[in-house]
Structures are given as structure tokens and as C-alpha cells.
Image (cartoon, rainbow, N blue to C red; front, side, top):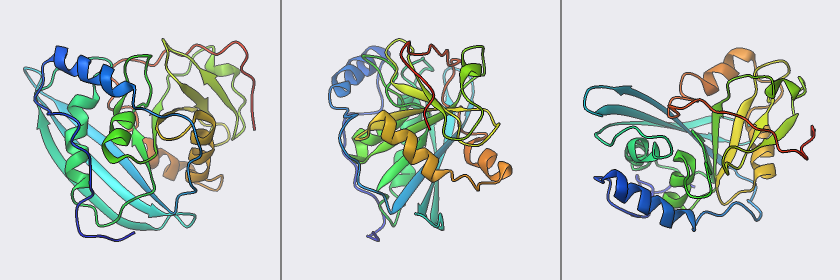
Length: 246
């Protein structure tokens, strides 16, 4: 859908916050996150990529890039970039308070409204906290999915090497899945951000990154931004009843 420049977003809170205020706000907002129900098949997908530089005294500069593409052709329709500075401290579980203001700047430049966002970072991260993808979902009231790199370990080696294999994982309440999107390449961590369930999020990512994707294009899709907003290493713990799925 083409509209006047600037995408409508909800003002949930101020961005100049103390750590204590941010934790309280996140706890309250967590109750509004939806990770079930049907997500309409998207015609436009918005890919949000993040890069940042950290300087002294918690100061960082964040660049948010949003690419709007059509499905299934993946034609690039527009690309918007915004750069913002943040003084919010870097804390695990609160990264969205550093990153999202730059995303809002890019959203304000869009001429089209995506049906779904795929965002660098995570969705649900615990029973009380969430990542950038969930924050974007609440601000836009649109389905969002978080993707980030996952450090290979003994447990992730249990995942089948073929595309489409995935394993639900848990990390202190995190709601996500380790997904092999291309044969033989390292898996990624996929998590629902808002208004989409885990299994549907996995299938949507497999649709977004089709089997015919060249390795170079896959790496361009993920790196260097895929894990940039996660300062802590993802530790995976497989759900006991999980099995490989196609």
C-alpha cells in the first residue's frame, strides 16, 4: 500500500529513560505481545537491519535500514535509512531502548506500509522481557519476526543439515527456534516478535529466504547486522520433546 510519507506508529513511551523506568515499561508492554493466531499472507515485507558503533559513556550511534520488498518476487520497492544517537546504557534484555529510535526514524520516511517486518534481533526473550522485534511490533501493530545469528555448539549440531529443519529452543523463557534456512549453512535463531506464532514465523522466514537463494545473497541478508543488537551470546537449550521438522 502506498501512502503519504511516514508510517503511523503508536507512542508507547518516552525514549529518554532510566534503566529502572525502562524495565518497568517493558514489563507492562510484555502483556500486550501476541504470539498466536493467524497472520495474513503478506504481499509486502519490510526488512529491518541495524548497525551500531559504541563510544564512551554509553553513547552509541545506530543506523537503521528498512527495505520494503514485494512477495513472492522479492522486488525491492524502497529503501530508507535513519541514523540516531543514543545514551541509553547497553544492558542485556533492554537493547531495544537503544536501537528502536533509529528504526522509528526510518519508518517515518517510508512511502509503503509492509504487511510484516523481519527485524535484526529477537522477539520474546524471557517471561518479562523482549527484544527489538517485539518492540517494533507493538509500535506498528504489525506482525514482526526477529532473526539473529546463533553460535554453533554441541546442541545445535543435532539439527539436520538440510533446509527446513528446525528445533524449538528455550533460554530462560525465550520463545524461538533454531532454523536451517539453506542446506549446510549455519542455522539462525528465529523468534516471533508480535502477532505471529513460532511455527508460522519459521515458515515465513523460509519463504522470505527461498531455497534458490545464493549463499552470497543469504549472507548479505543476515550479516553484518543480524546479531549486531545482541551483546550477549545466545545460549541454546533444546526443548526435550523437540524433533526435526520439514
